[in-house]
Length: 137
Image (tube, rainbow, N blue to C red; front, side, top):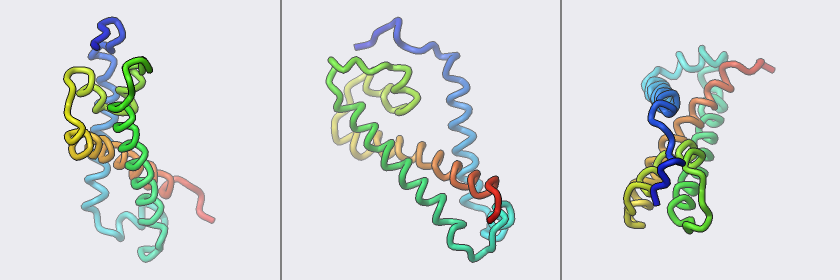
């Protein structure tokens, strides 16, 4: 199962790990900031419904897609020959499948939700960046 030549070199993934760490830190920071500070940064009224609905929609969308992607990565037959580098970037939990074969229960209740949390926080980050940098209408 481990295709030595196809596996990415560890140094190639440092940027990926740093980017995901920054997204996680940003998401946690936004979670603890007062609502008025977030509204000021996004140039919105404190009571504007879009202040939280748009980022939460992106969080939910990214989380659902990445949860399903983790399931597809686990359930994909070997004959599909999924590219490991592409799968690592789309689903970091794919590494677990390549190193050992976890149970389906572990995928459903541990690894796929972790993947959903990682990419859900990316959706949240993109949602707030979109609110903060778009032109006000």
